[in-house]
Length: 359
Image (cartoon, rainbow, N blue to C red; front, side, top):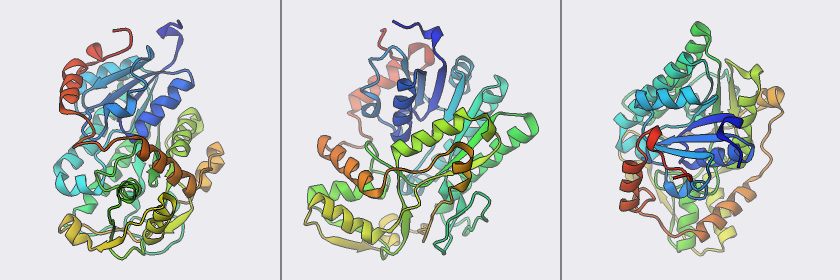
């Protein structure tokens, strides 16, 4: 067996989440030893179940808000991918304090320790930082942000991620931190949960169950959906290129579709007879939520820097999500049986007690 010292080590915060689990899998396949830090608030053991018997994968069930844990993990790893965040419209509406605290303070903790130990860092941001653009033109990284009032809860997430970016850039400019920022545009694929309002898994789950597909608003809003495999490839490429330090890059597909047409495409591909149901945003989430009309990434910058572009189209995305959903049983509250969650938190709560195959 290859020794641990022979491999480079990567820390992935949010490593049991949707994107994080795919990134861990990819890094392992590329020869990295991987430490995944996740408090399982929105992540799931199911996402990394196929990795937990590997000697080179270490799951640490704890929070990025714990400086002691982060200190030990950042110290022992060579690079850090910071993906941990509070995400999803429903979570933002129901738990705005958690959204702000996790996203801003969690990123502060990661930045502090990456700077202390001089480790290269990738920060995962979001297209939400662009705000509410009404035109369907692609958004370059230096586009102006168009925000609403602070009384509208939707902006809590966008503002918290914008603050993450500002903090990262400040650490780079003032303290020389080696970091790069990736703005993700609607990453989709197997393992993504519809629990927090993610539209494609929610549509697919309902279509397969024969239930009405709820379209929030009138369905004319457009989105571009990027396959998680393409996103992971972009993250790795940005991390591997030293020339990207101190820069921001859009990561997403430029294939745009209205939410109404997306619903029809899901019905067609699942051969479902489910009906379409139109629900005003106020009835879904209550007051304080606005939807973004259009969001298309300009990707010339990342293409020029690392040669990346999205290669998997929407039909591939949908086919993979449908296939995955047909294979899995419906999950409860947070995707875990309560006993398994309690065991994970008690048995893998610190880096020194994280479960690995060697145990």
